[in-house]
Amino acid sequence: MLTPDGKLYHIHCKPGDVGRYVLLPGDPFRTDLIAGYFDDAKLVAHNREHKTWTGTLNGVKVSVTSTGMGCPSAAIAVEELIKCGADTFIRVGTAGRVCDKAYDETLDGVINTAAVRDEGTTVHYIPIEYPAVADRHVVDALARASKRLGYNFAEGITQSKDSFYGQHEPETMPAEGRLKERWEAWRRGNVMSSEMESAAIFVISSIRGCRASSIMAYTEMRKTVEVACEALRTLIEQDRNT
Image (cartoon, rainbow, N blue to C red; front, side, top):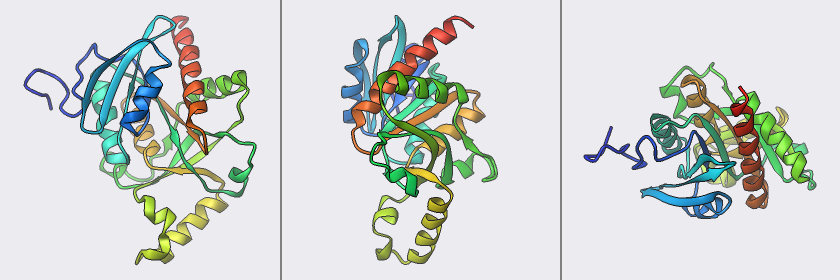
């Protein structure tokens, strides 16, 4: 799926336009903020919900691409970024709290080790029994970066859903009973956060032999960006030595 000038159809990038390390916010406007943490950042493309900047960290090419909201558009972005040469992804964004311990007010957010596949995109890739798990090296890099920066991010599972208002206004839905029953299961199962993209990013990365995790803020997104950039620096140096 290419444009007439040889770019990937949705993200409008081609091989060489992005680094192997990519941060993935949902919101296109957040790419501008994140690009400010890179050295020599340049706007590469903006088509639909997908906006891409590329710069460097530790002298190595890195990028940020917005996925839009939800697993369908996130899946498109990740598939096309992989075709452009990317292989390491960190989703950065905000999330809601789910289980009781997530309401600890000292927490800045959560580094996701896995995702509940409570969405419809990934079943088009592989049966539901296949787990949506983050790469342990990316999780470790995020955890160490958080500690170095003095932030308090827990590690745990996120729920990836398809309906924002199914979470926030379930009483307005004909499926109210099912939604509330499942939410209670996630709460009792110690799911730490709820968002809309991580499951697709994790499943596709696993299938394609890539690495991914996500870091979600409960309140202030700036900290997730700082931790993610610091984690990329760690991964860059680790990859140089392997």
